[in-house]
Structures are given as C-alpha cells and as structure tokens.
Image (tube, rainbow, N blue to C red; front, side, top):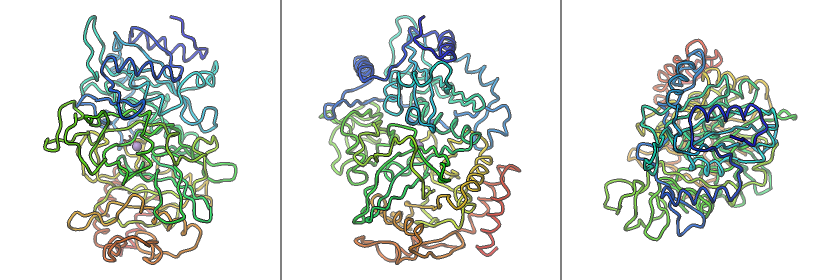
Length: 596
Ligand code: OXD
Ligand code: MN
C-alpha cells in the first residue's frame, strides 16, 4: 500500500500497525472540513450519529451503556520498574502488558478502516507544542480529534522526514467478520479494555473503549500522562488546569491556572463572567495547561487543545451562559437526551423539563422515568474558537504568564471557601494533599472522598512522589517569579446539605481577592491552614448571603483539621521514602500550627 508520508518512522509504524491489526483499508486524515463532513455523513447513514434539527451541523451519539467514562481501573503506566509508576497508578511490566495487548490487537481492525490522525498539541510550530499521531479504527474518534486538536496535512509537513511524534494506537476492539452487522457503538468488554502508557518510550496503546479520554488520545493520555513524564525530563509542566485571563476595571490583566478534579467546575470557571461590575474574563483553556519558564523567568502557559470536551449535565444559561453560546453549532454531543423537536437536553439545562425525550440509552423517557435522561457524564465536543469570550491569546505560541495557581476539590465539609499558601513549599503541600469527593467522570463509586493531588491522580504518568519533587524544583527555579498559590472549595454545605456559597459567576469575588493579594492591596488572616480573607476584603456587594453563612465559609475548625492529619500521614506514607522531605517538613509545621 502506498502511504503518502515522508517521515520514515511514521511510515514504518503505520505499516507495522496495519500488519498487526489487518484493517480493510487505511486512510490518512488531512484535517479538512470535507473530511469531517464525509465521515459525519457516513456515521449518520449508519445511524451512529443523529443530526440535530435545532443545531446547525451538530450531532448526537449514544455510547454503549458499558462505555460511558474514563476507566481508571483499566489505565496503566507501564514502566520497567513498578516504583517508577508509583502507588497512584496501575502497573504491569511493559513486556507482559505488550504481550497481552498484542494478542488483542492482532486482527482487531478486521472489516474496518484504519484512520491515521496526525495532530498537534499546541499551535503547530510553537516551541511548547508536541506532535502525536493517533491510529484509530473509530470514525467517531476522528471527528472528535478534528475539534479537540489540530489535525492534518500541516502536521505532516511540520513532522518532515525525521521529526519526532508520540505514537498513539487506538482500537475499539471489535473486529467485524465477513457479513457481520456492526453495532451502533462497538467496543470491547471491560476486562479487555486497556488504556496503556509507556512513558519511557513516549508510547500510548489503548484498546477496547471508544469513549472520551480512553479514546481521544491527545487529551489525557498524551496531553497529561505522557506529557507529564516528558515535562519532568525536560523541565516544564503538564497540568490538569484551566487557564483564564481576568481583567480589572483599570485594565490590569491577571492570568490564572486552576487545577480541580474532573467534573468539579473547571469549564465553568474557565468561562466565568464575573458578577462584579467592571471586571471581565477571557477563556484560554478549560482542562490542560502546558507551562515553561520563559526568558524573563516567569512561567508561561499554553492550552494544548483546540476544543472543549465538557460535561453537559448541569450546564445552563444560569450556570455557564458562555458554554451554552459555544454550543450553538458545530458540536458533537455524546450521551445527551434527544428532544422531540430534534435538540439535545440534559439534567439542569433548563427549568422546564421536557415532557418526553429519548434518553441516552435510546429509550423513551418522561419526567416520571426512574433514570436520568442524559448520562451524568454526557459530554459536548466544541471548538474553542466558538467560545464568545475566547482570548485573542488562546493560541499564542508563546503562551501567557501565569500569576496565580488555584487548587481545589469538592468538599462538603472542613475546607473553607479560599485560603492562600504561606509560600511555594506550603502551596505544594496544599496541592499534594488536595482531596475531593469522586464524580461520574470515571467509572466507579460517586461521592467517595479521595486524595487527588493537584487533580492529577488519574493523569500523572510517573511516580507521584517524583511529581511533587518536580513541583518543588520548579519553585526553586522560579523563585520570586513563581505564581502565588491558593486553595478553594466552592462546594461547602451546611448541616442540611445546602450549598453555602452560590458559586459560578460569584466565584469572581474570590478571584478578585486573589488579585488584590498579589498586588499587595489587602492583608490576610493568618490561620494554621494558610492565609484567609478578612471578611471585609471579600467584595460581596449585591450578593444576598447571610453573614453566618459567610462566617462558616471562612472558618477554620481546628479539631476538624486535626482529624485530617492521620489521613494525610497515611496518604504520604503510601509514597514511602520517595516522598520529598520538604513535604514531611510541611506536615510537621502544619501539625505544629494546629497545636500538636
Ligand atoms: C475530562 C476529565 O474529561 O477530567 O476532562 O475526565
Ligand atoms: Mn479533565
């Protein structure tokens, strides 16, 4: 077969994969609009995609009910030594894992087209960007990759004859025998799914799932797991962070990067419309930040993606009008409900609930039906460029200079609305001990408390203790140019389970306080956990929030925090001797501040 590719390693790899997976044909994607439209038409014809009458050029897909989220239990970091993957990752020795997966890959694309998807994470040609090539037998993956990354001929050109790339092999794991009728969402059973990373070879092998981060390999697999390992080797950072620009009434710009676990509001914060008069925000990215130290010693961030793969349920004109505007056209929806007039719907989208819809499983649904109309992890895939508040710098190849880091999670108790780190090491301690109640973004139990350091637990491609060390090293290099570090919790509840803080647009009040902190305009209250706002420094004008709620939101209950200590100790001990001493020291100091 003639492959129109000059890059020798790429041409060789395509041949090798084709021999292994035995597809019916091979198609190299050029990234054009015609290509996108042709594949969509093909999927509409096969009834995998449903065109939406109400939204131009938008389509609904329904996945298999067993294939609805990332599968952390089936995700592997395969390093020669188990220690190098660390206690937060599943591990199988590379030769053994490859042997198992080669057996699965053998003949797995039979009856299907093998798509070769050359993509760039970050603007093509930026020194901060990296090229990947995904081989996949899923046309759904191709159209999503078109939106989420920069796909096509320009990438092949940038690769040249000997440019480097990350090979990302993906198969849904559902070969078709002669005459076999295809299912609408083919995939392999759970025990055959593998989302594997070989960080020492910069290699990704994914098998058996067609959904989200399991299949769109530029995102979590390359953009975070492989990139984080590369970043440590090369002295930069790959983080699970949104990036936004906040602009004060005087026109001063602040760049904020914030790490929250999946489905904890990163997309909402990335698209915030400040409720405080005169303040504006621009969106740069909602999920991943790649950051390097620039010539001036500051930390510069790019969003390596070019699309949003956001959680749909809960998104509304009330909670995130910018997202709703972004979703008007050219969108791929997955596992949302279909309304009778040909639109999508999900829980929380409108106050009026449709009296009838087709649910995410394809069944009739009414408000009396026992289950949700949309799956809780239903998603939209939309181009970043359609976001009405996208920053003109969102694809600036040099990135934007970060002033503020925010960590956080979903905690109904204990953790106050906001506090600031005393210094970089303390900020790293805050990130390393970040905890959150689990969400539907991963297959597994929902609402369990877990440590999710830097919101990277599912995404760190190496031993997390070494990752903490990398953060400490970055601080040593950045010194007084380092971003200031804050921790937030928008999800605190009272005893009756009611949220104490309104969240969404009102979170701008907390961001404003952070900006005033870095400008030295306001003092803070020193507490054992960090620096908290004085009540009078939080701009609460126009917000109807009872003072007792505010007091609770800004309270630090020493006995509750003391009760966290054994859990933190246990969490740290899981890293054994690899945990940096500087973090043990932080814990000792924390205990001291809490009074023993
Ligand atoms: C995501 C996730 O899809 O974190 O961004 O699960
Ligand atoms: Mn994410």
